Length: 314
Image 1 (cartoon, rainbow, N blue to C red):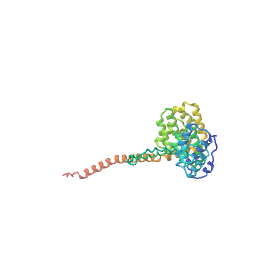
Image 2 (image 1 turned 90 degrees about the vertical axis):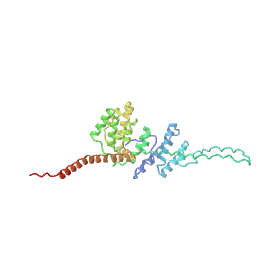
Image 3 (image 1 turned 45 degrees about the vertical axis):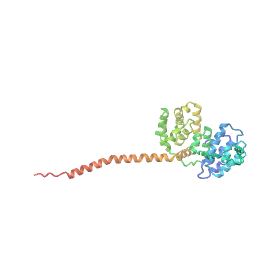
Image 4 (image 1 turned 90 degrees about the horizontal axis):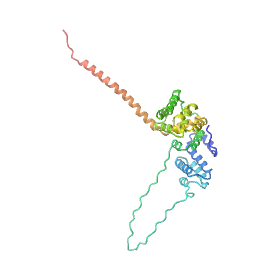
């Protein structure tokens, strides 16, 4: 089991783990908010990061989660106004009023000038990504927090088929030869994810997705270390980073890794269906195309033979 960060306990997650079908996004929003309010002062980067994550998650959670997050932020002096406004806490968010325009004196005999009304400006929608997007966009510390939450809600029975020795060897050879495209193709087939996500896992410069892949497929820690050293120079040039990821491989549970892989598969099912529909008819059509000329040719030959005039012999 991966150890949660020591900055604060995770309140209420035990109750969530006892319920079936719990979405991890409400849990993630609560934990991120609890961690945010426990620190009295935040840097500009920390505030921006929390606001982006919170705004992307608020519309995806239930009313109870919104109420809990609103209650936590209402007692926090440095609560971001954008998040407060998104939660409907208008009283706590300072309202920005535009200055009133000056009214010019117009004589009664003169007609008031016609001023065209300004066109309404549509508010830009807030982009809401999947948990996969949230995970890949988060830094290493937040990724470990997400994995800690998944460990509590993951189903231990939902496992991914382990990789064969041939698959593990192909992954290691592709990493040793520095062939990320080949490595991604092996991941695509082994995990059952689409091609774009397989490349995203392969090219990630932090390394946690590779660890999740290896843990879910049952790849040994020694093989994983060799993959990390050679596959991505951004990871392999830091021995400390490689050992840190190796420790994560030992800490993360198999259920957590498999749960994340299940989320990866769920976030892009259409691409796999289109790929399957694109390949199967081609092979079937090719087979029919190969067989048809032979059949027609045989029928034509038989017809010519049957209609050939009979030459009588004396």
